[in-house]
Image (cartoon, rainbow over all chains, first blue to last red; front, side):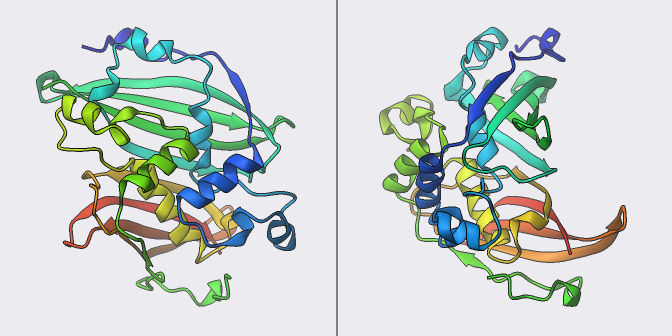
Amino acid sequence: MIDKKHIGRQLPTFLVTAEAGQLRFFAKATGETNPVYFDEQAARDAGYPNLPLPPTFLFSLEFQIPSNAWRDELGIVTARILHGEESFRYHRMAYAGDTLRFDVRIADIYDKKGGALEFVVRETRVTNQHGEHVADLRSVLVQRNS
Amino acid sequence: MNAISLEKINVGDTLPPLALPPINRTTLALFAGASGDHNAIHIDTDYARRAGMPDVFAHGMLSMAYLARLLTQWVDQRQLREFGVRFLGITHLGHQITCTGTVVERFEVDGEQRIKVEVRTTNQYGETKIVGDAVIAL
């Protein structure tokens, strides 16, 4: 069982710089056809200072957390997890070249079906290099124990 | 892009759908690299079978990225206020996903006119895989 004592735990804050090359790769991998997401000139023509991060890309940047030790400490088994829910609340846009700060917190841990399914809820606050609030993410992981 | 007139949007309106090609192993390998999600269950068949799955399967966030495309081909991303989904079923190799959306509500927050759009992904067999909603400022 994933120990509920971890509820409220704050993971070490980290900084990630969104890179234009990674955004272009993401655009390719998702079949993006809107050039503002892969062509700097199109982005500027649309009034953006640089390539914008598409709506779900902050989730990708969160994978750059320097250590995944917290997963082991909670008892998360990668082969058994599924993504249950994901949500974003947006406050401002982020762009290639921005250095974003991720503050991640284990917001909740609960189980269903007598422990056959365990849920870990993560809440992440993202701010930019100017200290401005960019977005909040909420991620629910499901671990299958049966 | 974004030639629609947001003032004319009404509850019940549907978004132009987004039809994707069938999911294949290349799709998943590229998305693993591009998204930073390197979980082997999406790219290594041997690993997926040991984990009790018939084969590799699509990242949930790939489908959410497709739904994001559904939204941003319709409105400018600067208008997007909230976007959330629940992953109901696994999107397998060969599944041909179509993203659809419907305007379900119109309301005001802090003087800003907003709409709520319900979105979903459906495969070629009519099975819904992801449901969610987005809040968009007009």
